[in-house]
Length: 238
Image (tube, rainbow, N blue to C red):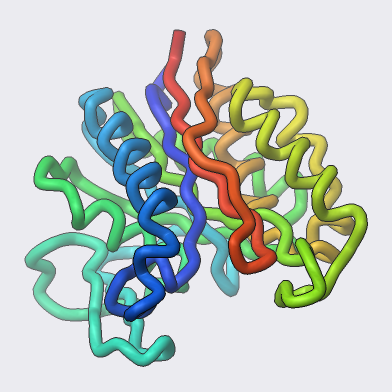
């Protein structure tokens, strides 16, 4: 049972105060919830933390690797591993925000990362879940993913009546650590609603199922301030 704890966080660039600028206080509650989830993750005393987030392809990202916030107007680079010798591979946005969230905490076990394509199918997701679980003897996973981006006329994906019930279902599944509900998320509907978290959440559910035993979840945050759903959850084994 290698997976011992998990944290689920969103990955908007505006989570980083330097990117948000004067709007940074608008996400103070979200930022605090993410810090709580990561703090609980590290309190589980893992021997390794695996970041999971969407990227252009499915598979591991080998160190050294570095994320950049230059595309969002901030000259800030975030290494996956502190003190790495060079920048190496480029982290996608999801894992860049994951590296930033971890860097806010002093206690740092070894870190590795896997990315998953937005259209990844069941076989790819299952293989990646196995890879996450095999990363160490006590694995904790920081899973990065946004909900639908269709919550209102000003949302990136405009307004879609399916978005709210979709997000409510995800929120309930994360709160209850409901593996079946996450694994049953429809990839087509998820893509239509621009829900970037679908594949990472399903990797988490697969890894949790492979670890066996029961899981307890707690939803720490649920909002859609810019028409995009942001969830923060903490999972632990019971």
